[in-house]
Image (tube, rainbow, N blue to C red; front, side, top):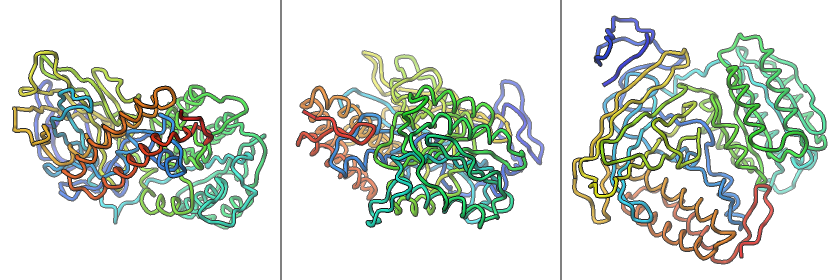
Length: 507
């Protein structure tokens, strides 16, 4: 059942009465250009903002290092996988569906699970992205290697990756778009004033001119980018700062909280932020801090293949938000409580309250997910667990939409592993959440209690391998390998890669 709290640009007559939920047949105007609305069962994808991949963890493991705990980001893993839920045809751009499951934690705690599936009704073949004012902000410090060209294309410098990515993005801009280039190193420079997106010769020449410029004053560069954003003409549908960096600030502000304040101020003024993190020295905790805000997302790239994949899979959807302030407000029935939340970029996994929120939902080629773990109080059986409440969000036009949630586990039979999932997608989402949170826990333990870290990863690998076999999902085999490789590194006493890519002894 769906309840609209404010008018939603209806073309037909829809009735909303106080305290009563009505389902009515209404023609709905598309909320943004090129987004057809309808009940097609062939949904497109949508995903929460924040970190969009596990690239940093994967790259460090491949290089023989145990990643730091902050590199294991549940929403990043979710965004890499297809986690859709089936259901009735959706009638709005953002489709929210729910399904439940029952499965113990890695430690054996009985638990219920509620997945919120994210998808969309857009047709990617006819989609026209909103017009864009882009302030591309480049780190030209020495660590980026702008002036150094490696002969081996599989090991490009962060500067090379940035140049190739920025050039590819700029080539997608048109006459309705605008772009400006800001660089920061020892000094901040406006390399290119605001320029129409179809002035490709001028834009590409400015990109080609970029070169190395000293230390890393990221604070001044980001502040200047937001100043340029504020001076934008306002003729495009959205304004976005796109930060290209290896995230190693060493002048001015250097702490995540300081940059979070800068990004939050920009978000409050309606400026989105996309971080393109390049190189194995990424400070993951900083990416997490500055991209969970309204309009924020982040991607990790390490070579030209990553650039090609990002442009094929994520453009133009990474600059196409379809909802803001998605709130999951769910109350369990008596005898149960919400114990954990996964995939919510607005807070660390495990921090829960009466309502969990996601600042932004973007279009995506994959259908995303949010996940809650429900734990019974002592002496309470899982059968009879009921979850009620609502899902609410704002459209890009500011309309507020609310959908009711009413889900129940009535004691359906468990499988031989002691699990029940209303849909296969819930089983996959739960398996990935347990795996990533266990990897993070093992990484936290590794520097001080190596044997306990190994035991945690051993259990996590066994659990996930069994889940992957039961789900028979080809996409999970790569994650089995990832967990196996991490366990091997821990057993070998490998160095733990810190957030600058250097090693810390694991023993």
